[in-house]
Length: 478
Image (cartoon, rainbow, N blue to C red; front, top):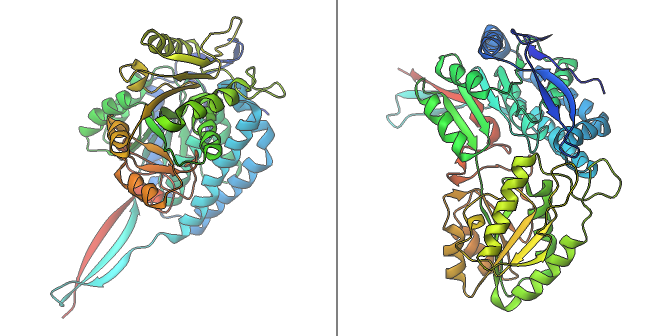
């Protein structure tokens, strides 16, 4: 697949204004794959110029026309699944089988929002005084800044671009510097699908502060959609406040995975493998803290350790590989430090726990039992293939422990009791709950969290609402 290496501004591929480039590394080898344009503040302003220039015209485009563009882009993505998966594996590391799954997931956002584009509705009603009518219109919020992370480089792009196109918004997309290639090829796919020039602009950069802050403070961006860490999210909220930029954010997580004594352990272990090992554990939805009832903790730990030990670690392009590398050496060092701290505090290593030698940023699937609640990994998003198991004795205790965190993105509950399932699901302070399942992500469902895990929702019927404003027209009737 021929992948563009330049910035995409106003429908044209261009070099950075100062000619700067940045490397894209393969985390499985540590080698440079290629270089792409490295945008600065001037390039970002040109991208906003292009988005602002066509916003009015794009907002007036027929919903069906916007829908058909998304549907054509969906078809193109599906037809190029293998090429896109290989590209993603090369720049991010996940095994090819998992990368193919992400391609399907990413494409589905375009199909979903192609259907939502023609279902944007307002309303009409009589006000309580009986003499006035209320007309409600939905309007695109305006030019958007979309910032995506490296862990799901294609799907996070489509999850933001899809509803923006459907709503009639123009965009500037800034992908993570580790994984720019998936976003660049996505722009080319949308151009091929007929997206007008200037509606989507892509700026790749290693200098996010230099690029993003002027846009948020400049007064022309009207919407920010960000996926990333809570720390960065807070900074962007501060910068957005000056111009009262509308924001939606999917931030960090510290997901509890709760296994009650009446749980089906086959389901629980299967769910744990999905919730923990999807994307090598580099997911905000990854199970971070495993709370297992004391009566079944030993059996669960042994089973999980056996499953984790059986996984094959290696470059994602090699046949039979289950677990690819972490994104970079910094990510691996973080995981190493967290495991070492837990062991020093008394944790028992049942699987993994030792960093392999050789190239790449690999770390083995690891299971720790008898983890101290004071361990650093209890209050830190691990972002790696490490399952930390603690025990509990009663429901109130485990709910209190699960909620004892600043984050609230997702929680997982395994029990065969319907009453308990509903009760605990309601009590968990999280935006999503996986009930006897380790997978919650779906384009048809509203994705997002509470507390410091974010603002707003992506996906589902409400996903497009983040890109639309209400306009109310008062109509007196004599």
